[in-house]
Image 1: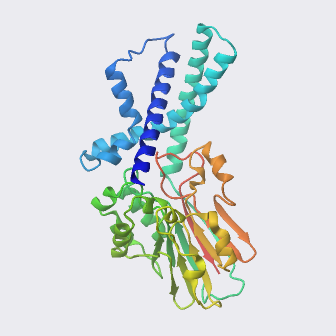
Image 2 (image 1 turned 60 degrees about the vertical axis):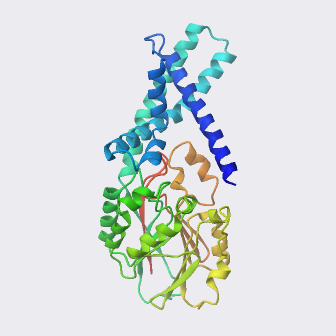
Image 3 (image 1 turned 90 degrees about the vertical axis):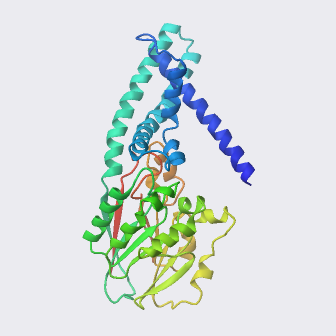
Length: 376
C-alpha cells in the first residue's frame, strides 16, 4: 500500500514538474518579441522554488524561520492563481496556432495576448480571492421545530473547514473565536477539516488552546474531516481538542440538556483508510425518538442516510463551494447541495463553504463564512 502511494506521489510530482516547465516555456515564448528571458540554471532554480512554494513550508516547517515559511505561503497563493489561468489559456493558444497554421510572428503575438489575459485574470483573482478568503461573513438561517420538542430556541453556530496549519494560524483562529462569541451561541459545531495537511503548526503553536475561549450554553462539539484523518494523526488532534474543551464525536451520540441528541460521524474517507465508520443505525441505537436529533457529517454526499433515519438536521462542510472557479461549477454538480440550506420534508441540511481554504489563500467561487442557525 505504501509503495503504491509513493509511486502515485512520484508520478503526480513528475506531471506537475512538466506543467511548471511548460508554463514557463510558454511565458518565455510569449515575451520574446519584447525581451529575452535568460533560461539558465539560476532561472530554472527560481522557477522550481516558485512552483514548489506550497510544498516547501509543508515539508520544512520545522526547520525554516517563520518569515520564510510565510513568504513561501504567500508566493504559493498567487502562483496557484497564475498557474490555473496559464493551464487554461496557453493550451487554447497552442491549439489556435496549430490548427490555424499561424506564422511564427502571429503565433508570438497571440501568445503575448494570451499572457496579458492571464496576468489580468491573475490580478483580479488575487484581489477578489484574497478578500473572499480573509474576510468571513455570517449567514443566518431559521428552522422551525414543527413538533415543538425543544424547550427554548437554539442558537447554533456552524463552522467547518478551518484548515489550521501553514496558511491559517493563530491570528485567524482568534478572530474566528471572537466572531462566534459575539453571536452568543447556545451550541458551537465544528464540522471537520480542523487541521490542514500538516499537524506540526497545530501542535507547535498550541492552536487548540484558542478553542477553549469559545463561550456557549451547551459547549463546543466537533467531528473529523478527510484532512484530519488522512494525515494519520486523528488521535493527536482529538486529544488536543478535548484538552481544550471541544468534545470530538467519533461515530457516537450525546444527549444534551435531556432534550436533543447530537450525533457525530467520522468522515467517509475513513473507509479508504482501513477503519470503516459506523452506519447511522449503529450509532443511534435505541434513542428516544420523541427528542430532536442533529447530526454532523463532514461530507454532505451521504445526507440521504440521515434523511432515511429521521434525523432533523444535518450539518456538513467539505465542499468549499468549489473555492476557485472553474472548479466551483464542477463541485456544484457533484452534490445535491454544495452550499447553503436544503429542506426536504422534515429533514434539514446545512452545508458550509468553510472558514479557511484548502491550498492557496484564495476564494473566487465562494466566501469564507460562519453559519448561524436558529431552531425554534
